[in-house]
Length: 433
Image 1 (spheres, rainbow, N blue to C red):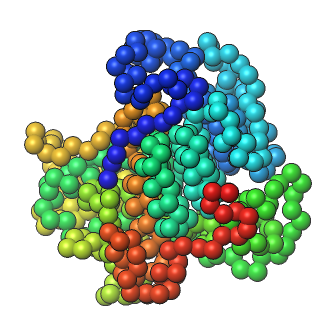
Image 2 (spheres, rainbow, N blue to C red):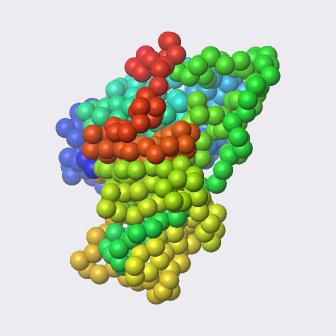
Image 3 (cartoon, rainbow, N blue to C red):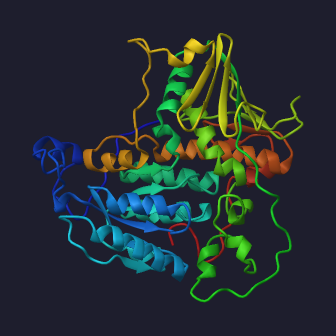
């Protein structure tokens, strides 16, 4: 479900009735089409959460012609200062923008309160995504939020509804939608070039088991551990719990995310949703390993294909679509293969469905702000894809079938799973606070 997005751009579009109108009446040189961006049209940004995933975003938004980073935020003083230094180094080397050191904050509320910041990039652990994004959206700021969009299905719906109500731009960082190979694969599936797709296999990898009985350690100086925990239950500090690398740390804990279902499912499940035309809906049945006649955990679309997770396929982190007239493999790095081989290189016909084109996920976000176009991975799309992640995670954790009504957005067969659609939030970290 896609709706046209806009953003109230405090510093330079207050007088416009809407950005689409501004594009019609403002000379192209003002909008950067003639070789430059006027300072008044530069999108002022802040980066909230400055661990591992944020570095690429900081570099991009600090250096892109139409954006600049005015502020960074993190609960860890060391990371905060390193992030500010990186932004300042990039900004110093830019021409015609005027250097001013980036501001550094430990509390994201101070960024939300600034009228001169038009957009934020949220690169925190998953359990903070919605709380920060919701405040930003309600303040009229555009949001680029890392995937998965939410910690729970309930808070994802709250955020998607808030984006629709406020008319702001929100881009979810499921960036495979901005890769040509994935778009081509989705178009071939959507237009029936594989015939009826009945089976999909995907590999999302695995994390080590969730650690138990971690030894309490002193909280490091300059680290606001209470705020890092946020809505989640209080736990004694241990460095492993807050570690931000891709193979362990907080990503291994269900309290802070959905493990691999959220980490990589937010990429591959998202592409499957796109290929099947299910961006406003989703699957209806979710099964753990060794259930429903399969050794693999899997989910099923009503009247549609079954998706097998971590089934053995050609390459790790790949998607395999199987239809009654052919099969297709796609992965990162532009890799797309098919059987028969001609399928992968087929050109679409004039009457075929053509999916939205984006060749740069962050640029697509910027263009949505500047030109009033719909971005490629909206809040509704991100919510629906995250919902698949959460439901697959529930089935795995409960070792039980979970039946889902995607229209009503409720579990229909399992009280324990229904209770996991939302979570209690630790005071004072309530949504909207």
